[in-house]
Image (cartoon, rainbow, N blue to C red; front, side):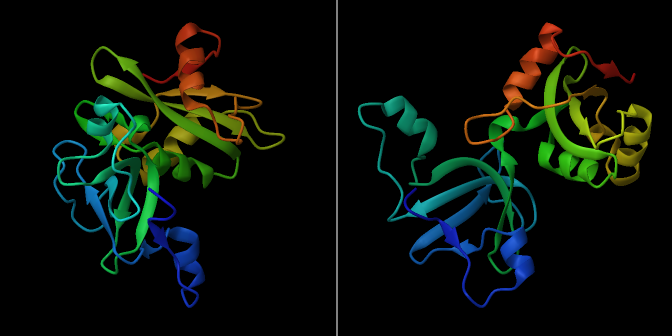
Length: 208
């Protein structure tokens, strides 16, 4: 999708500029679609951000399978980003589809859990991932880098989450890290964290 799908205008508020990615560009359509069935989501509900317009690619070169996975039969480019749209058409990005956690049939969004944990004064940095579970399919694991002078207190952070989140969104596995594995652009490598946890390289506390 080139070069832009949404943008802010010069007269928008600071809140809109900080909390959204703006509205659709001219001659560009934005839709928030259900992960399960592709239907348009109600305003404010999380779904995949899809784009249709003159700036969207036609296809991958000599790769019809990749094209079919990215562009549907109605010409919508599926971005792989999760987000919401408000009544004014402003779009907010909330995460990535591949990072979504499916626990007992419920879709959980790591960004919501991460933002809640970042509100706790002892948390400097956090990453939330889903890990396999025989009963639920996936359960929530939180990797925490505490603020200087603090140590991970899983019980305290669990209580903080329960005060602000539904029970199924509260992490049940907690791990303390001094630093996160990062990509070249400085983003946390969540898949690497998941593999390090499953391999035992990262030791965790599990709340049953």
